[in-house]
Length: 390
Ligand SMILES: [Zn+2]
Image (cartoon, rainbow, N blue to C red; front, side, top):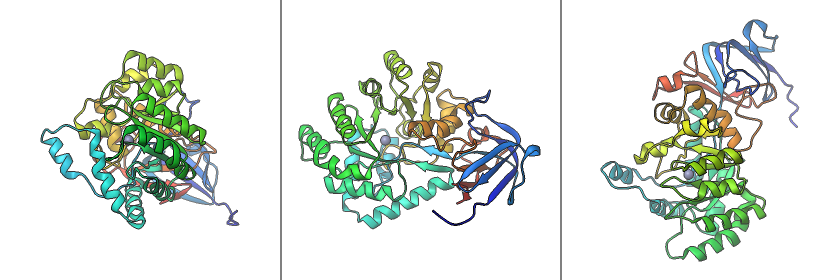
């Protein structure tokens, strides 16, 4: 343990403090004219500024809003190259298909560990500057035992929330049967020590329900928790499979039947919506309103990846969710903070109540509403991780 004495910091003159306190009357547990005390890495106190206790040092938030740091529960940051030409072609009318992943696989295999690491570092820094304080990172652009394991080892340098996504797409030169056997066998064995989660892309053109189930069950047997990409490009069995297996989260959920929505609301599996993907592929947006009205917990995440969505910005995703998916600003901010934490099964982040990690974002705005009201504007004044500005 560090022998450094714990100092306390009072952050005061906060116009609006979003706590995400589940006991509060409103969804965000918002406190006006607020203050917050940080002790060491954690939040020690929140409340009205006039009631704040004394602390060793004081920071004046200058009438800005303070919200919990964003929890981005879905990203693919370990890759090389970019697919700007593919994006331009798509905007000129060519369709998006899952097979484009193979372009990135070729570039990723050719990159050194150092190149991959510095690229992830750049993207994580880009996320921090936009208020993201917890990020999940997947493998999935290696698709060999060696390249998947080293992708996860790179990701682990940046986060505990690493996800083995060997089942991203079937690589060229192998059959689906051979590849699923590899993913559930030697590849899993090499990757499990570097991963907390296992994932599969359950979609036509990628893996069907039986193959996805085999990957998730093998991952579970190796001690990994499950999550799933499903129902992105069309209706399919993935969402119901995720609910049946009791996975923590199922991601995309763009094309849902009434049965899918009922399964989500009954199972408690979190629906992670990735609005940047629909923006970048010109697909219809998922219907967040329908899910929220059915009692489903919704998370918003970036899906930052070089093919279908190369944004690292949760403020951008919040603006899209409000404008295009029927969410209120409060629901969208909640989904990008507390929702993301739930989707990673984390109870230490995603809220600013006593005992939580002091991950916070100071906004150059008086309320959280401005994140959607002022789209595209860099509103993050500062980002704090574990009690310190970064
Ligand atoms: Zn994804």
